[in-house]
Image 1: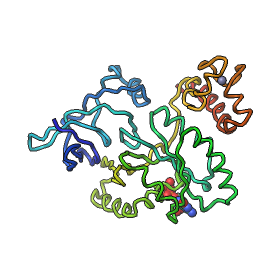
Image 2: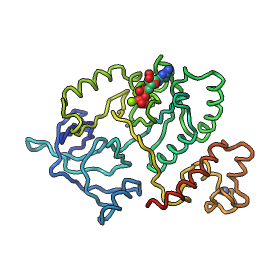
Image 3: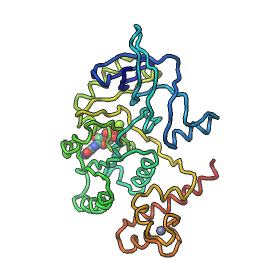
Image 4: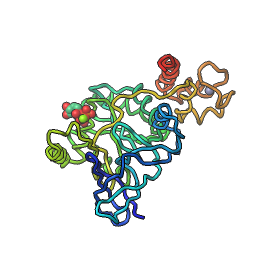
Length: 318
Ligand SMILES: Nc1nc2c(ncn2[C@@H]2O[C@H](COP(=O)(O)OP(=O)(O)O)[C@@H](O)[C@H]2O)c(=O)[nH]1
Ligand SMILES: [Mg+2]
Ligand SMILES: [Zn+2]
């Protein structure tokens, strides 16, 4: 029984890395669908169960980039025979087993938004994805404004998030970022124009060439050909296409929001109503107290209240 890791998919052809020999193997999947156990109630799972009547624990899916698979090379054509359980799963990009998401925000142009940051953090938390926050274009912001931003961002550092500041154009802050990719599969995310491509090029100057070669090799059909690829970088992998281009909640109940704010969860043991406290209008709420005395960033709480509203209002849509 040989195990491999899928690093590339072009049309129906998979490139595996054998886990033992580290050699590349070209493989195919017999038929289109495979069985897989989904162990978590993530949104991917919810989407599938909405559409199908199958047991959500056993689904038919195709292998995809990021999968660990069992393959059979006893015949001429190497076949993928089984997909090992996934720890998480994305549709755009079509990649699974992601270790971290590089959340890119620009300091300006577009302006930094705490609302967007908190929203991304909720969604990633819900999908069991670990964020690393990168703030780009620090060369375009006044020094005082940058210091004010860093002061606010210190709150996020305190509650456990990693934050990096870069100027990708002049390669500033890139060196310290480089080590975070080792042994990990990383996806980039962030609004258009925040500097994701520029950051990737700063990390991998050879990348531009590579993407050009690939589109040439794929020719005109590139828009219709399925193509997902991982780039090797510093002992890890980076996904070639950014994710979360359209970010929307897949939260159906307002009381789920509080479970996705780890800082609030920790404090809720001190709320009168413990984990039942919504931190909105309840008496003796430790979260509201912490907001009042400045221990919780005011914008973080304001966004929380807004998200609860948003989730309540979207109910009509479903
Ligand atoms: N001054 C400055 N400009 C940047 C930086 N990062 C990106 N840009 C510029 O911002 C614009 C959008 O960057 P791009 O990488 O295409 O953003 P993407 O849409 O997230 O991929 C481009 O004009 C970049 O040159 C940075 O750190 N400093
Ligand atoms: Mg881009
Ligand atoms: Zn509370």
